Length: 487
Image (cartoon, helix red, strand yellow):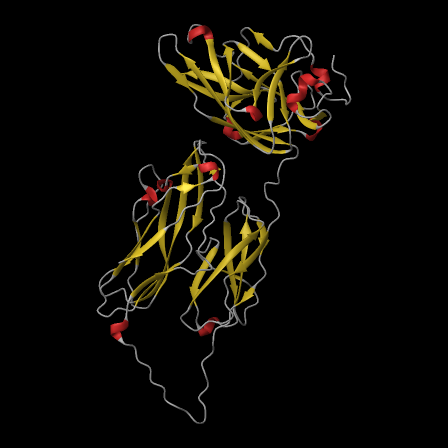
């Protein structure tokens, strides 16, 4: 017998019968596309379905009436703070941690104040699969602590089904027509991703599999979807000469997943700020002119509902004024030696790191995706004769991440654009290159080019970057190097 030391804990979980065999009524087949948080009530978190020759994992949301079948990508399972309980002073539960330490437990028997998740195969028909069973696997757990899923025998002893801290995957065989509940124990507060997979052998031959399916759990309070962030502007020099390029960059502290901006300006004599048309990214580049001297600039960050999250302090542009004619003057003659010209491609050494926002699942839930902005690339052509030029980029090596994990450079693509170009230049952006297996920036791709007779001068190029990764890509931070070539 387990002695209880708190109102809620493993001690109340000694029950007979963890698995109910038999045919239950199937939930309504309605689908819900909105993302929901399930925190209280009954749900078949891992709900196995088979239709049209395909095996799939769903969520049977029984917290509402009538129940709804949901895509796991649309659900966050919340383990409320009230689920906190101590590890019993019982050697049988030592796998949960030292006695008395805190865990957060969704119990096998229903507590109306907590979520009651389980797994379900009641919609699967007899005779379809060999042995009338499917194999359910926990492939991976990403999070701040360990996850243990276990039932209990008639004497209260644990029967571990899935355990993340002693090596995964863990596998159980589940008969069809099964509806089961268990204890779900988490060792730390925070966000977790549990990756499940169901497999089966067809009675007529062949196998079917759901493939890896991610389930999101949050232990404790939900994270703020719009965390407080402060916005500032970097990149402004003390003074510019007319014709120089000004590049301003919005910086979030701390960074968030929000990436929708508007830039504003206010020049001498104006009372109101004016939105700068077409500038919705974190970077804004333009050419300094004497008319812009003392103009102010600020940037605002917006959420998905176009509400202002934060506004940066304004910065003031200084452009050198024309010198006055002195009483005693000198004539200064400058010359350019045409034989000394060349073609140079360069990147600001203090602005050469691209940090993409954390990848998020796309609307279909089958890819990790992120977009970002290539830092400005300056191309200067001082050659005589105007032979034209071509600037290309390539990532020759895989992206590398934690513990030797990698993914190919073909998973990153771009859409080039021209930030600025000199008078008389005819610079054009290269074609868009999408991220795709065997493509992307693994091959040399044109960022920008200028035809014969229209390349002399200085131009700035950039590109919108698009990252697309399979859902099985390991979590972590990955890096690689883009090589730029000018010919």
